[in-house]
Length: 446
Image (tube, rainbow, N blue to C red; front, side, top):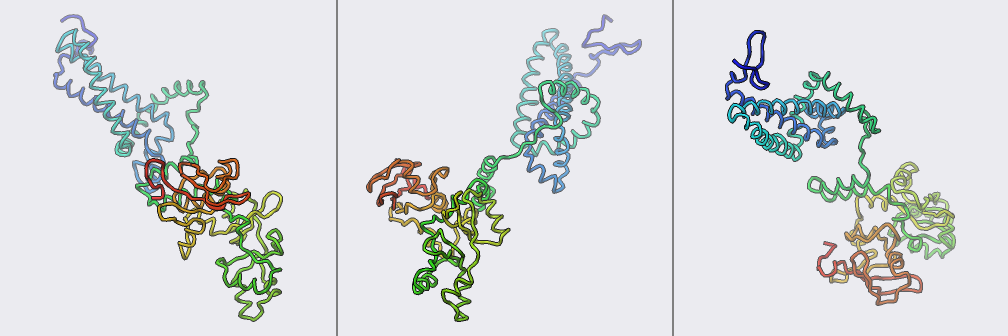
């Protein structure tokens, strides 16, 4: 009968079993099944490892069985990878042995080289590239069904997985890596912004802008959005009573700081509702006005908007005077100003806010006040002036020019052509802004 070969004969007691006894069709069928299993393990590995962890957690919390199993498996990725690679290598090696037997039976000893080449191409296409590409594109369609197989398979092969991980994890520890307590990836503010920006197809633009505004609350300071001191409207209690009455009847604001001679001497905040109550009682005079004033609320200029939002809520305030490190008043900020950073401009008359600092010229250009806040301009018109430096348009121009420009001077900042229209001895009063990319004719306000 001849000497048994490594591939053909297996001795069972006194009887020799030859692989030649197995029908070639069964060997081909077994090879196909093994190639499919190899593709399953390869696709499962890619699908489980590329799952969106936050979406998976959401589905798991909602009761999705596959998401729960996948979440449990990914708690110990070393064990998951271990069972996947054990299964994948086992089926690949077994497929290689069967392919070799088939090749020898069909082509003799020369078939070994043929089998090696063919099997490499077949496994590469059907067991690696195709399933991994599909799993990378649709991880949930692969990972969740695969988790129903991987979890019991992990329990079945746990002793082998444990031994394999014992050596692998030991090597990782030598390299200073903890395989058990891996650092959890947390999204930074910039990464969250990228996630929101990339979800434009799922989130309405207005909601997207609100989310981005909320993310900026920690970075933006009160000084970045305050009404500058020179533009704060208040009541000088030393003015004539007629002038004070005119201010009360014509003020567009419901809360006004009250001071003596200068804003630095602010000693109270007047709510116009209290003035109306005094008028109803016929007690509206200088002394009555002083008696209904509320204690002024002061805010350090470097306070983050998020912190100030909580402070407004905590102290039941809606208006605060912004002070610098020396206690000098720099401006005023209201709860409405802060909320507009999140929800955008809102007012009973949108035109009042929209053109408070900028007047349309008619050709797409705007005549803008130099004291206009850059963040407000960007938010209202969709412009992209830098906000990491000066807070006002005047400050941005002076920083760029390093001198007080003369009227008629033209310059380019952040891709926007600017023309200085009016200046004083120390400030830029008005600027003509043409919001077009040079040479493209693309209106950036669109």
